[in-house]
Image (cartoon, rainbow, N blue to C red; front, side):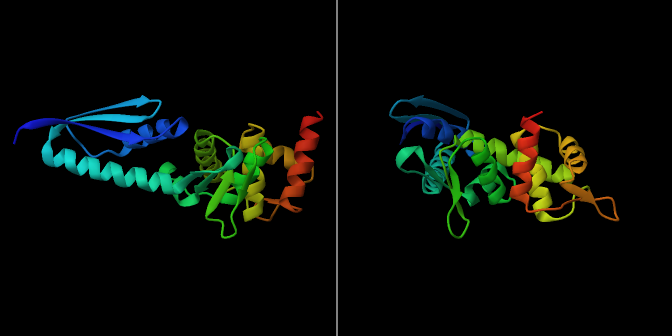
Length: 208
């Protein structure tokens, strides 16, 4: 079977084009050669390989693009609606959406969840959201043996990311401030409602 060259076009604009190109490069099935060019009006894709491989790859790309566009919707005022399921699939990390929203809000972005907590509404860049999701997962894993209680973990994760502090520093300072204490197993636990504790910690930290 001879090798052939085929050209394809995907309409998109701005940030969406860059995200789609990244997604396609990460997940495209194997063909002999692929080139993706980003233009103002969309993606231009050149594929070189066996006819059956190219056909399969293009069908896969079409499904991928359709899934992406249904997962991320641009609304008015620069707000995007992003499915949590998409973020989990893209980053390959599970995370508590409420923590993502709290972090984005404290970084100065608008952020909220829909009623069933399956979608996030925010004006934050998609790249930043994915970066924060990865950091949430990293911090949760770093403290899982040292912190007890869900909201206690939320507290440490938010502070570690928003203030760019190591989790150990957050724990030590929160303990010295009387916001956290230790149980009989030596695990840290928050002593008050976690959002109020966040406000107290951040206020004192920034007044130092």
